[in-house]
Image 1 (tube, rainbow, N blue to C red):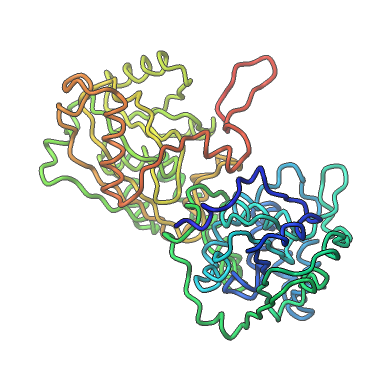
Image 2 (spheres, one colour):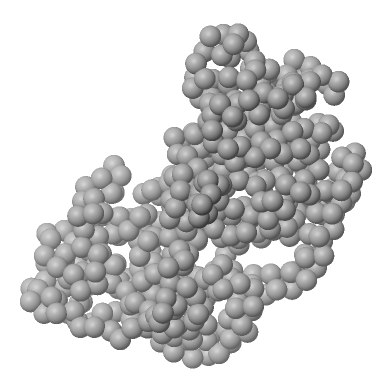
Length: 502
C-alpha cells in the first residue's frame, strides 16, 4: 500500500513551524531528523553546491568549493552550515528560487536509504525537522514523502533578496503543553535537534552512522511519488571530489563544446557525423529487420517520423542517422537555435488548424519530424502525445530516442534554452540511442484504418514506451512547467499575443 494513502490532503495540513507540535497529539505521529534518519551521506556540501551552481552560477559555486576546507575545519553543523548558507543564498532572488522543489528532490531521493525510509514511513503522520533552510527541504518532504509538517529555519530577506542569514529561532509555544504520545528518530551526531520539541516525546531512537554505512539505495519503484520532472543542469552529485573534477574539466569542455557545435551545425551531415564521433559523441542506431517497409529511402518524400522528446537535438540526430535533411516542428525553440539550425524548423502556434496546415505543407516538401510530447522529459517516462500528427498522413514511423549524459543535462525549464546544445556537448561522451520502429500498419492509422486521432496517438506512445522500457503518463507540457517553474510555460508580452516560454 502507498504510505501516503492514509494521509490528509496537503491543503488540510498545518505547514507553519509553530504548528508542528500540534500534530504530535495524534496517536501515531513520528518526529524524525531528516538528514540523520533518511540520508545515507553525512555531508551537506553536495546540496549546497547544487544551490550555488543552479541558483548562483559557476562563480558562486567556485567560491563555495574554495571555501570547503574552512567549512570542513569548523564542521558543517553550526558555523560551517552558516558559511555555506551565506555563500549560496546571499543576493539570490526569493520569488524565483525554486531549487528546493525543482532540483534537489532528485538528489535527495537518490541519497535516501531504504532502511531509514522504511523506519519513517511506518507511521500515519510524520513531522520532519532539518538543519537545512526550509526553502531547500520543505518541497521535497511534503511532495515526495507526504510529511505533515516541517520544522526548519527560515532565511532572512530584504527587498525580495535573500541575505544569506538564518532568521532567529523562535520558541515553539505549543510544545510546552504537550504530554508526549509519539516516538522520534534522531541522529545523535548532528547536534541540531529541537531539544524543546524532543523533551515532550514518549520515545526517542538514535540512528548511528555505523548503521548507515550498510544502508541500501531506495529503489525507484519504492518512491512514494514517481520522480518524473526535475530541472537544473548538473546530472551528477557534486561531492568535493566530483566538484574538483568538474572545475578541472570545464575549461577543456567549453572549447570542445564550441568545436562540436560549429562542426555539427555548419558542415554537411556526411562530414559532421564522423567529426562528432571522433570528438567523443556516441550515437547508437537500431532499425527494423526490414527497413524498406518502415523507412523511405532518400528519394521518397512525405514520411512522418514521430519520436519522443529528450533534447532539442532530437530532429538533428535523426537527420544525421538518415543522412538526409528533415524538417522539424517545435513548440518552444530559442530564436538563436532557429537561426543556426542546419535543418528547417517551424514554430507551432498552438492553433490546431494553423498548425495542421503548416505541418501538411512541410510534408509535401519532404519528410518531417514531430515530437508530440511538446516538451522534453529526462526520466524514463513518456508524456501525453498530442494527437495532431495522426491526422496528417498514414506514412508514420515511430522513433524511440534516449540520451545518456554524465555531467550536464542539455534541457531546461527555467534556464536559457539557447544554451541547451552547448550544455549537451559539454559532456565528455554524450550518447544518443535512436531506434526506428516498424512503420504503422494502415489498420492503425486515421485515414487508412478509421482510427481516431487519439487512438493513433496512444498507440504510437505505447509502441515507443515499450521499445525504451519507459512508462506512459497522461502528464503534459503544462504539468511540467507548473511543477518546475510555477507557470504554464508561456509568457505574455504587453500588447502582444501569447508566445511560447523561452
